[in-house]
Image (cartoon, rainbow, N blue to C red; front, top):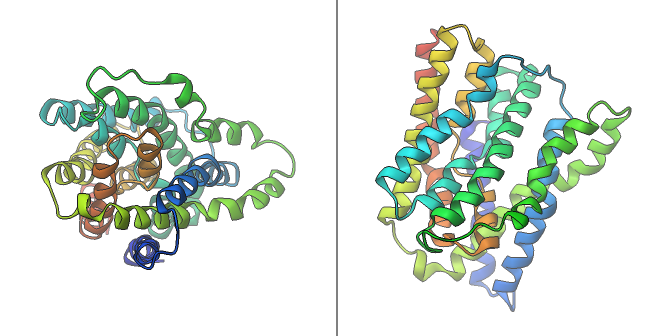
Length: 310
């Protein structure tokens, strides 16, 4: 599937959810949003990560640069975001930490680099999600202008999130004989993750259409940091690591592609769960998904030029 087709596949369930709101399909739409959100966050998205990690063959990279290529650019990006957009740095942190690496990034890596990269890309996705699940919700609560700068993160609530545990459980069970049977059993649930979350997002956008109407400074800030600043910082780190011999070509390309992804639908689920920064996150998901049609090909072109690829 082409990048254009994937982005359109992201937008169609959003439109369907909006249509469901328009015709009054749900008598209590806010309750429907809350229930769909719980399903996506506690069952569907953890299943998606589990299938991606447990169901793929890959060798664990041993170079420290591979493991640092996600947290270091993210930390630098969030530092600049906090410095220049302090008021909205909480929701920006969540939006930037959670890229759409599972639903969009993983298939895009396979389409561009070949099916043999699925294992490495799945591990990279696991690193992204693990770090995002630890950092994103924490900073959303700690830095959010909505919750107040002194908001105290509920660590116990964070630890209860299945997304946090999906990757270590998958790695633990990966060597188990007949693990493919478990993966096959979980895969249908994983397939529901993106459509359910996107439908829920569309329903939310309709219900909050007045509050969400029009572009604004915070939404643009979220998207600029996610689609421009993070890929730029990540690209500089990755190219430097590649030229120093710390990363091989395949690792470098996978890591940069994933860094260029738009905001994940998961961010809306988490913001809705904690009731912080929901409007800004919802706008940033839709806007970044649309603008990724231009920015992702641009980063791919630059990547090929810097790595001297045809």
